Image 1 (cartoon, chains in turn blue, purple):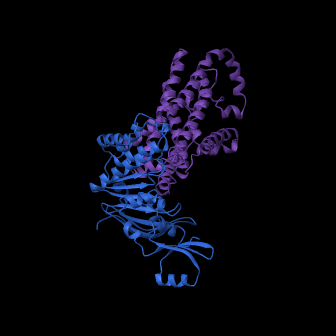
Image 2 (cartoon, each protein chain N blue to C red):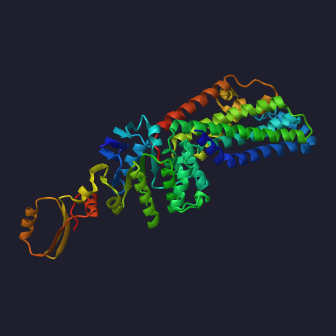
Image 3 (cartoon, one colour):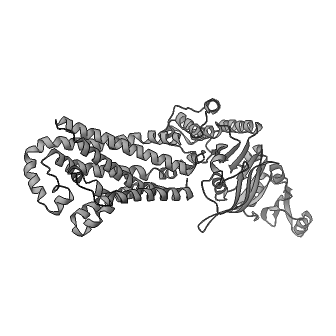
Amino acid sequence: MESVIRIQNLTKTYGKKRGVADVSFDVHKGEIFGFIGPNGAGKSTTIRSMLGLIRYDSGSIEILGMDAVRDHEKILKDIGYMPSEALFYPAMKVSDVIKYAADVRQADCTEEAGRLCERLQVDTAKKIRELSLGNRKKVSIVCAMQHKPRLFIFDEPTGGLDPLVQNTFFELIKGYVNDGATCMLSTHILPEVRNHCDRAAIMREGHLIMADTVDNLIKTSAKCVRVEADGEIREYMYDGDINDLLAELSGRHIDNVTIEEPSLEDIFMHFYDGGKERV
Amino acid sequence: MTAIIKQELKLNLKSMLIWALTVGGLGFICIMMYTSMEGDVVEMADSFSEMGAFSDAFGMSTLSIATIAGFFATEVGTVHGLGSAMFAAFFASSMLSKEEDGHTGEFLYALPVSRGKVITAKGLTILVHLAAFTLICGAFYAAGFTALGEEIPSEELIRFLTCMLLMNVEVASVSYLISATSSKTRMGLALGVSLIIYTYDIMGRVIPSMKDYLFLGPFSYVNASEIFAHMDVPKYSFTVAAVTVVLMTAMTYVTYTKKDLAC
């Protein structure tokens, strides 16, 4: 499968502080790739390294077959990036911001920008300082999509958007992906990953825990176990031999036990907590 | 790059016009005050020129303030020198850092433009706005001379404004480096630097032992009294200015292109 993003052994530290360590993963052409992890997991550091906003210490990043450092400017022509904060110059009009982004790209995006503004109901006459977070996000979506890039990178894109706009947003992404684009979606919202992503990677404390298809992540051999015994309730993920689990439980007075397939949320929480059991 | 230049020119136009109208307007008012003070100024000129080192510092021993040229050089020279240096520092010190301070860097630097080109575009914007500022102020001063019915000392005025523009570029280059090194806008620091440079020049003219080192400061070649009296600027002043501008600009490129942006 053709890789649109290939990250190998990416390491970045901020002085003594951890950024990311030895992160490697691929994003394939035509997929929507979820990038999951709690705050401080290293998602933004990875994305910022990809975009050249920060310089990484070691490893390599290849985007669209080009080196992220050497071919930085060329790569950005084919990327549509939406930052989590969506901040623009407050004194500018929305229409001016959208046109400015197109002008820097030296592209005439009038038609596509118009279509996007209509779909997302963006008021282009307003000034940026008059917009709410949700409306600024909509402007950011237009800026990221208007030049029809080959790769989309979204950092927490749906925060502040109402459910209707969220739906429109994912419809738009799917439209571009059907036309051959690729999308990397960094998010905390697991249903977004479950409903829209083909594959996903989970980050924790600067390390990549796992990367696989969303189906495989859910179909893990680990089970979500809930035991009510001896007056206490224990709930944990169990990844060992099921016979060993039954043997362990057999010596106790069990009031109730449930063993079920974990949801993506359970899996995420399992990695989030570092695999510790939750009682 | 053209899009960034256009954008920055537009974003900073209002601020530049306010500074130019303020400094130019103050200069105009100073020139207009000459007629109302004309009678008294002859006596004042004699006492001012006999104040030793202080007369030297403010150029009052070089040119009599009883003449319109002397009055302009002494009064407007100081107003324009300080005002334009503060404008240059204020303007350049926020040019790069404002992208991180205002969190707009993630928008700008995700567009296909290298940081080197952004530095060049914003640097050119500073130059254009400094030149426009100088021209507007120059127009005010010329209008002042005309309003008084005096002949405009074109040659001296052009030389004065050109030297001021060079001084502004020098101050701006230092402030631009401050802007590149910090993720917060350090306007106070930049304004402080411009005031220290001005104070250095005053001290250099008052304290005899410092006179030999006057050429190190950018105010050494913008003393209006010396310009209007056709005196030579201190040796190496322009060389130091050129070296400072080149060095500061080079350091800005090196620092900013290697920097981790906190946007």
